[in-house]
Length: 428
Ligand code: AMO
Image 1 (cartoon, rainbow, N blue to C red):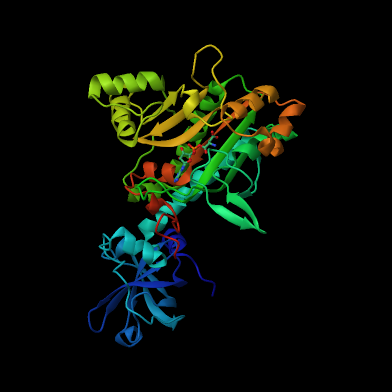
Image 2 (cartoon, rainbow, N blue to C red):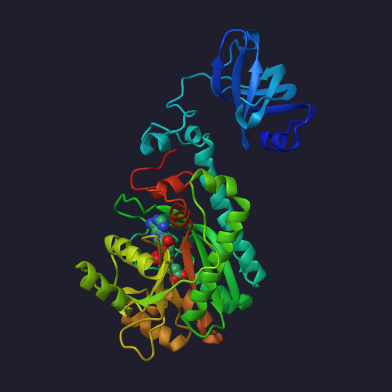
């Protein structure tokens, strides 16, 4: 008999079935015993005899064959009366914490130390189902708009986002780095003729603080688009992608979103506001000073609350960041002094994206590299493409864990990383 998933059994209600999974809970009442079986798709009540229950420990992997019957007292009103039971593996140790109660008692750090055990909880695994479908929605939407998926190198020769925060790698005796982002390569691929590209890949930042919103290794959803008018095209694209992702999640992750009590809005518009205006509002209305050329974490939170109350939007594009605070490739505004054609997207109080238009003129790019006190000869591998007809282009990157965490209202970014890396954590 072929094994079926619990979810399928609940839908199809066969008279007899074979299930596999882990022993999630045991309620032994003497002659009749209830065992909750858990597989990838859900849980179901099994009815077992005293003899069957012998040697059965929590989290033992088992396979069972039995009769499927209705029972209004069982979860989902269905249970299986076990006729045949096989133990498929052994449990050698007591669990580091209980995983079968409504809430998990262990601290996040303990859960992360024992990540594979914590992940056995359906509501923790649900985070990654949602993450998988964010990626899927991102991919599907972009492919439908003629974007090509690319994979660019993660061992690289120079910084893309500024020199700090880079991990060094010994590359056959030569000092190289782990990519902070695919920035240069995604631009180069626009120039290489792909015109529109996207990448889902790891990015590395040697963050020197342990915060609730920083990882040392995160997944970056990168987009770069050629032949644009200006950064407005890029913001519009991101707005469309997010709308698509949200409706895709509503369709594919209803069960998982329900676990977190989340309903995602659809057909939303994202307001735009300049950084200067945002900083002025923060100062005038909330007596909150901002750092030069940016909003800090507290400012992002306060400002988001204001945007929600004023525009009824969870998102806000903050535009026109100053030249001095943006990386070397950012397009300066031709008519507004000292500001760039770049933006951040803040979602429920946290920056999830940076993006903008890039410099596409070769000479202008070389001049800018010099202005940043960098040596153009170190960037020839990047700038050479620009010599041969680079179209106007721009793009953005969404931090996948940040988007996931904000969608689900998680309080720490590590919860949205399957196996997180941070200042202190390189195991498991
Ligand atoms: P930026 O450096 O702002 O821009 O990064 C883009 C987005 O990546 C996410 N992110 C992080 N997530 C978790 N941990 C970190 N340490 C971390 N650092 C960044 C955030 C952030 O908004 N090349 C540009 C993008 C572009 O212009 O296309 C860039 O990397 O969500």
